[in-house]
Image (cartoon, rainbow, N blue to C red; front, side, top):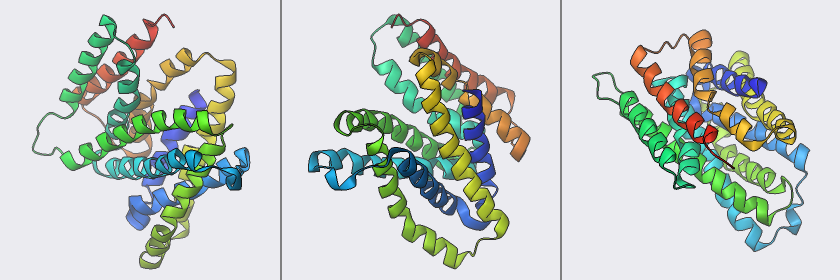
Length: 267
């Protein structure tokens, strides 16, 4: 779990180093290609056997997958890794809190909302577009979870996710060509983009796959709440993106809300 979280956030940080040359769109395009190659190699989907009922949610998942990564990486470029990942984390947190009707979850929701208010408080330097893109990534992550459930029921194994990653990569293929023609990538920029794809897609996917075979889902979900903190630490070390005490307070509130919700759950 530690390796998965650090790999994911380090991959995003390394990918942002290629923004000056490729931009967020170019880096996301490379990440989609890497994700498709890895998932196809692991799942080996039989696309010819898919029915129309199966292709529907797969295509929606492909659109959501691409939009989620593009909005997140653009937000990272504007507001920094720690803040962007914290706001994106509201997606799965909202899904978890909406699934229950307990009083403790209502309290957790209020804690999370308080944290978001602190993070998005009006300031002269506040980048509302960047924060809005991070919230769009959160909405996409929530949709990604719900669509993955549907795809998992209709398509065996990981074939549906692999097919969605492949379609998403095809959608970004023209984008990647345009970016490469207009902004020829340097060797360093291309290496950073590929590293982002491997570290933020391939390694976390495989690590999570093995982890969930050995660990209860609640324990895995509890550790997932630490990802915003890992993102802030990696952003500080790799990118020099320091957070002030109010941003740490808001981030802590979001992490605490998720942790309390999971720890207090009986199932």
